[in-house]
Amino acid sequence: MVLIIDPQIAGISGDMLLSALVDLGAKKSKIIEGVKVSQNFLHHSKIEKIDFKKTDKHGVNATTLVLKLDEHSHERKGIEIQNCITKTAQKIGLSERASKFAKNSIETLISAESKIHGVPKDSVHFHEASSIDTVIDIIGVAIALDDLKCFDHDIITMPVAVGNGTISFSHGVASNPASAILGIFAKSGIIISGNDSQDELTTPTGAAMLVNLTDRCVEHYPLMKIDSVGYGAGQKNFESFSNVLKMVLGEKSSLKSDSVSILETNVDDVSGEVLAHVIDKIMSSGAKDISVIPTLTKKGRPSHMISVICDHKNVDNLIQVLISETGTLGVRIRSSERFIVPRKIIPLKIKIHSKDFIVRCKTASKHQFKVEYDDIKSISEKLSISFKQTEELIKAEVKKQLK
Image (cartoon, rainbow, N blue to C red; front, side, top):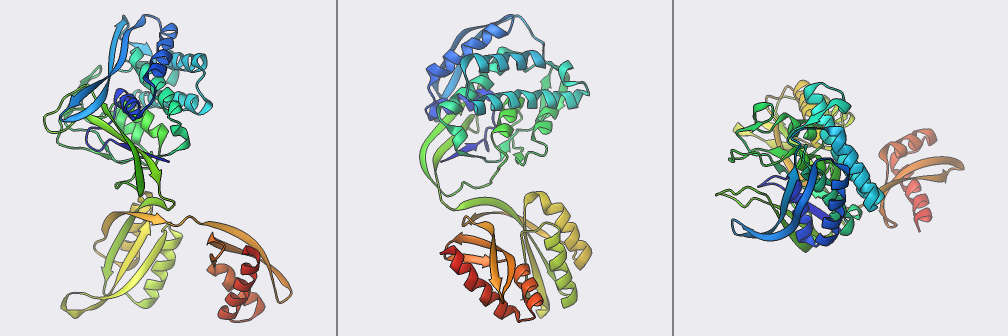
């Protein structure tokens, strides 16, 4: 199964994530009973009312968290919230994976604040996150994920809307997204996006839980059969869009999918020797694949289009390689989703001409395999026979073992 978290329009907050999971089918009575235990471990905080109700958000029927608290603390050390979460998780018997998720989520929040303010983690003070509702969000989501068995699923997020404008908080006015949000998403692999909203759409608690649920972010829904859809409502109302977090649960295709970047440039004054060098340099610099395609450009000039497939994280480095090695004045970039037949690389011991060799074989099935080029070349040179003959001999041996 695959779980899609879709915060592209309205972002994500702790209560939106929790409410969306309830809308998906998580038992609200189990969540309510579990989170109420937390008030035993946090002084001056009492949950007077907690429930989940249906609400209309700009035409979308969603679930919202109804919460009434009696609190007399506006500032707490992060470690107090952390201890409350840890003790609550132990008391209610969260699964190991759910407990780890809850622990990591609060640690992510504390680490972000520690870096921003330049203080040790045990000295971090929470203001906006000091309320017991931070505990409720994290523990509640952990219970819901356990109840829906989501930790067994492939969890994917879409790009996260963060809003725009400025925000006012305990330290004054800051541009949106706030430093905590940027720190949490830094190096996470998750894409963020601003929009026309002049509000904070993604909260630190929502961001912290998201990065601990997944590091896989895609721009298009994967190939899947939809089982159920959940909508978690935020507390704010907007005129131009529904303030809801959408979550989609379904059966994923047997094909593996991922998101890659494609870099392209046209060159019309580069020799074959340079192109050969570029291919080697690009592949050794982390590209997944490269193609060099003969083309005709303006005024009938013969040229070549260089197309590189790579991970998003390698884009900057590979662009620099293309520019420095070809002298191109521009590189086109686009993102693309791709579907991949599941495969694995296995080492096989074979015997050719009475000599033993190890070859790496990429297999998708017993009848679909490919031997690594470098291994064929190496054996060909050692046996002093042609590459073509070596390949045929290796394939015959591999087929025997894959039967």
